Length: 384
Image (cartoon, rainbow, N blue to C red; front, side):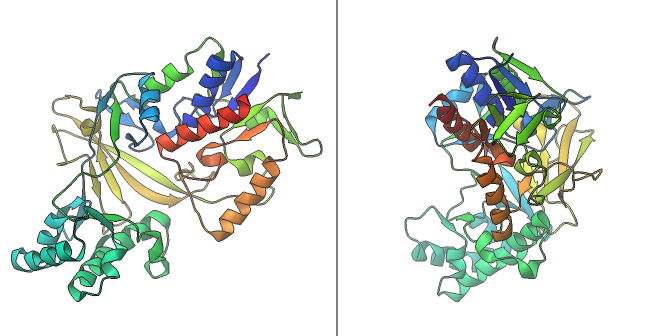
């Protein structure tokens, strides 16, 4: 018999399972609906020996030393700085937008004037949110801000979230940062890393403990029931503490309706060349249907001659019954959905032996470091 049931083998579930097994010395059963561990971080070698991430590209970034040290316990990591471009009007431009972007947009003479104005308007600032451009009183700076919205942020967001451009609230994207220099560093976090042997190996090491048993290809909801009358969760009829990282609405039988998500159709392509792109990531705000491509050899550092594999992302509305778009990726956060989620959370809070967390449980998008931090928070609640 097990002491704890953990539903889901992504970061939240795997980290909590390890902490319970290691620090509390308790037996843990991890139930994973997919046929593999690692959640959306799952990676595997394709037929050409290239390590690809089947649910889209991930890199580990954080400002917290303790979280970087935590993941380093479970495998070898190497430093990795993300580089990215965005295709606008047929030109590849740096992300974040910087002084080189201005030169590509405006040409040498006009860009020199605008760059000088930006330096004077924002002295000593390395990066600013884009809304500070559109809010500036200088017409030239305002024009640049509006250009970025019209060429990139508005069309990209429209595709990503399935919202008509005219209905996008600019406040949603107004805090995106631009660089007031030629800096092309995509992310600013102190620790930026990739696992030497891939993410799946990291998860294997996290879950590799004598007190942990993992069952993949298992739908936990076939064995777990939420007894509303007694406010307790049962596993095969037995009351046992359950850590649940799956969709909170499905745990309660969609009692208040389904929580919506955006999904992705990820198409993989292999090219007969060493490299196809100049950088790992390219965003396509103006393309028809797709938003981003990733070339994985840049992420893995592999030397595979004559072959390279890319993924192209097509955003879709989540539909669990569809052939495509049947994986919930991004919670659609708005007032209506927050209220619906809160109903589920209020219900979950009544169950004394239930701990709900993770992207699907909390109905919140987590970067990897935030998911680990959330897992450690929940473990402290369990331990208490």
